[in-house]
Image 1 (tube, rainbow, N blue to C red):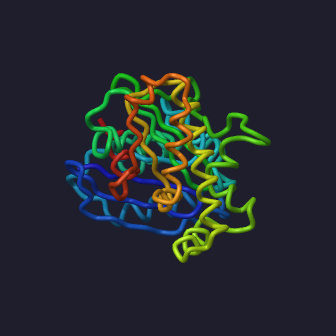
Image 2: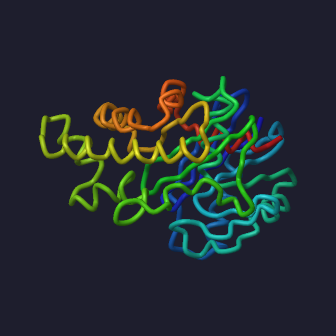
Image 3: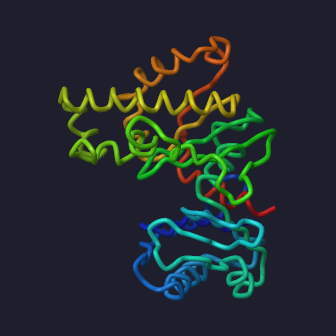
Length: 274
């Protein structure tokens, strides 16, 4: 058994994982505005609630830049006090077991590769569409993170008047004076403006996918994140955009899939423990 943990500026999600199943789960709001030590204390308190003698390691996914070899969180997104936090060392000393720390998008990719939609592929790119746009890359069955765990930050590539993150995540809806949740609910009621907004979003996501095809040419691209709640509203325009990719054979072979398994990030974080 392993403990998988997913941390962002909103919540801490913890689960005991064995064989791709989560046997116990805890969720607590992250005290994101408090000090580094206070948040670490909160995390330790949560781990103590679920740890037992059968646990052989802890895997943690954090939103932000992580120096994975030393398990140092260098810059956690929306947790201001977490700058250069030696999380691996702190928790290994506290619990006396192996601890592995990585970026949350990489944990998403790990989870999909071993427990989700990517189990039959060796080369996949997993895209989280949420507040931002995060990407995890698996090449030849190995997680590719780059020199500073920053590989695959495709959301930050220039696109139109800003970058892909502004057009493919929550910022796209904020820019249009709404939220993804509100736009989804209104679209289901037949609101033409909101339906058009989701249609436009699909076109932008299609352009993002074409960028991935140019750079990585994977066997499959897996979409996750809360934006995919509206998948049925943007899928048609997304595929239409992808169909205009200049290499027809690539379009014919690529599998564009939607993440289906709940808490896939927890499973991926637990899979860090080897």
